[in-house]
Amino acid sequence: MEDFKDFITEKKEDDTYQLVILSHDDPHDPNETAPLVQKKAKELGIEVFLAELMGCYLEDGEGDTKLLYTYPVDENGKADLPTIKKDSEYSEPIIMNPKNTLVMVRGLNAKDGCASWWTMVRTLEYAGFKILNSVKCNDICNDKWHNQMMFQRHEINTPRTVLIRHAAGDVDAAEKLDNKFPMILKTSIGSQGIGVMWVESAKSLHGIVQLLYRENPYIDIILQEHIKTNYDVRVIVVGGEILGAMKRPIIKGDFRSNVSQGSVPETFELTKLEKKESLRAAIAVDGDIVGVDFIPSKDREKENPYFIEVNSTPGLVGIEAVLSKAVSKPLVKEKGISITLEILKKYKNRDLWKGIKA
Figure 1 (cartoon, rainbow, N blue to C red):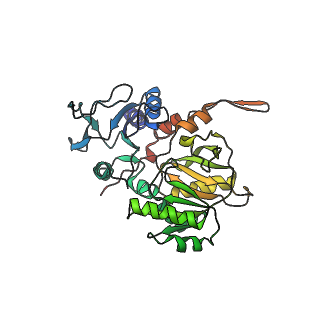
Figure 2: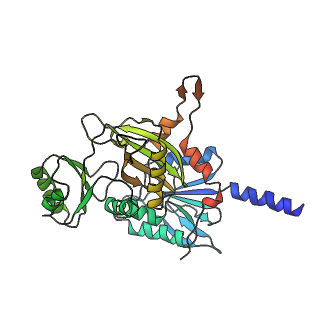
Figure 3: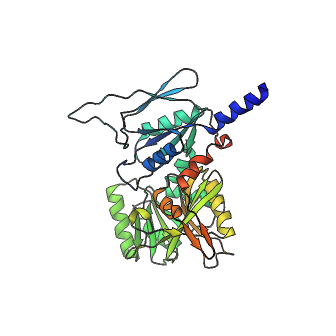
């Protein structure tokens, strides 16, 4: 009987956890993911804290616990941050224990300042907390060139890509891509389609590169062959499993397909090959919850897709809207799903929690 009681107690502990979202999202923007996750976590009865990264800090608690101090956040997710005209006091600390606290990181770029924020995330990771996603994953995904290097290392199909190493490197880079214009130029750091440019000629390439290096002499720029397509695909991979995919049509009058830039996503059914390669791409970047982006090949059943990048903080609003709608098929009516709820449910399985000890 005691063994049975222990089993029940252990099972209950395994099924419950608290979620701390370290976020620099705008809680009042309906396209931001952190407020959506907060809302869905509450629906599942998960204790959830939305902590604004600006100004928050950690202290050691008793035993393995950490105390997270943050400025007060109201029920709508708005933080009471200090200004020049007013001060603000910290709220009561969030008590965190690696045995029952899951930490999700949102809106934070490892390469774009915010060094102290990432030091705090690393501290939690070294203390054994499960971080979604790991610092390693964010380091790879927040740098497009690093992302490409991991694709090449794992032999994942991707458009030919070269690094422009200095202000006069555009000629050599274009030659490596056989001078086949148009090409796609990207700053190595950037998200939501920002820093991605369409280049039609060697002359325009030279002008763009000169301008970028004049603004920032230490910038990393990559040049990529253009794969002609009418759409790309975003696949959400969670804990080594594909939870959903959506087709993102190219925006009219543009060459990008980002939902944040105006693309209207649609449901999409993956082939076996696309599923296999998408999972490999997620593994290549050590991803827990990632958005894998690819351009489909002409023969989707037999030819590998062209993988563009993996996003370590994928927006969930667009795919949530797509998958939550009821899907009608001949003789079948499928009820839509909330991919955000599915993600949160999945992490009730403690086998997916892998804290890192220094």
